[in-house]
Length: 218
Image (tube, rainbow, N blue to C red; front, side, top):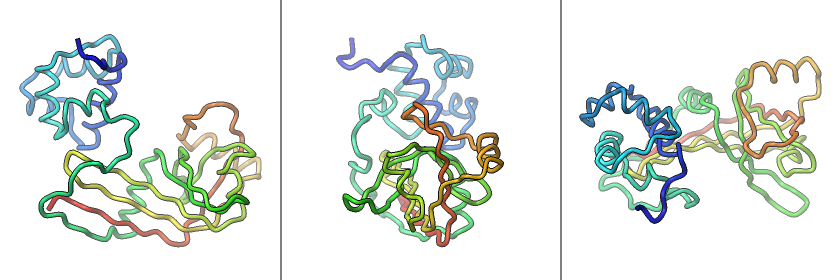
């Protein structure tokens, strides 16, 4: 028995997320790994699924990752612990692609100034009409961004390939107070704060400058 078994269903979620990161269908992964598409679907969707080591080895190779990563062995560790690729290539990401990368809502980091000094905190965000939006509640740090020029950063890191990208947004943050605008955000934004609880305050960052960078394995 593994000394650190993954919580039930976690492997399926990580597997599906990695597959989506590579823009692969279940059929494509199944063909790469030499497994049945139906069983792959079962593992992704059924919390009770307990795939064997042979299955995990084949799928990990097909998804260009490792079995420990699928099992969540690196959960809680900061990204970027791997070594650099042999021939890394650094490129600037154009603004149009930056917006496309931002549009896939998820987790970003907002940098602002507080009475205690500079602060950088993660928030669950979405993009609506070209602006970064997120929910919070006073007196949390993100709620203090209202009226400030802030920085907002999003990135994706692939340790298996030692590559990734980051996008930086600079702009003014403001609390959304108009009832009609709040209702519009509630209907259109897909973001749900992981922290839970009552977070009724909607914040909006209107970008003034957007820059991005990408590192590929070359």
